[in-house]
Length: 318
Image (cartoon, rainbow, N blue to C red; front, side):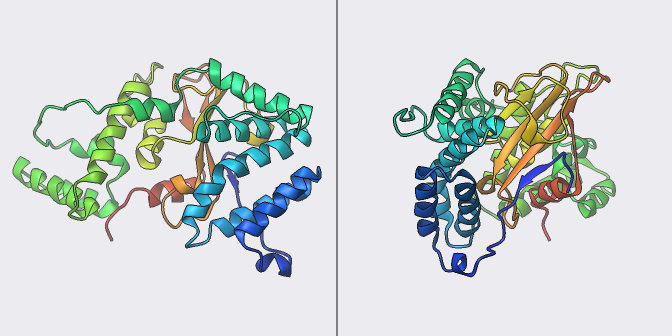
């Protein structure tokens, strides 16, 4: 698996007894291990917990556990000296539980310091991508006729190969307009056009926040970041690494979450399982964009796993 796509997988249920443990039992076990200072054991139990909570039928429980598990992971990682990972998990926790505090009497100085550093970084950061998107309102767009280059716009991230071939055979604007109506109807399934509305909002947001100011001068919805944003939506959080990227995402230093274009380095968007397309088995996906000063900014560092995930999000009709 490529280093460029850091994907956290739930570990296998290696012990027979673990197979019989419910998510609630595993969570209580992890809490006791944290209380006892068994950091590595607690982290391993939370891996098992992720696997159990991710099973079909446990969706509500998985959502309920997301914040506390992120917190306890941060505690374990801080005490094991994994400060970058601890900061990322504490940031994830604070996004889910704004205003939460950490008890300095109960938790170690390392954990408290990492938690407060995460809070400080978030307080000083510019508005995050998720928050900016939450507050964003899709502007009213004038009605424009569908032209022969419709397929070259942001819809390029959705259209399938057979649809491209069909589009190429169309001769008139009336035929193209009918094709576009059928295109969206196939994806919305005759509902209230929720899929198209989400697409339009993501396109407008990408053009407002993700437009490149490099040599390409490319509209945000046509960039690599725009492609990922349109297909997967806003990440749980993003972070900018302003130095040359090291060998592994896990070794990187955290930096402020910001939707703005930065200097040379990398930008990493973090997605949890609940944000990924149905059928994707990964517990977490970190999508990396690189800026190296070669004329293009925020270039997607792709691999086969990420390509499959993005393809699954396209919702191409069978």
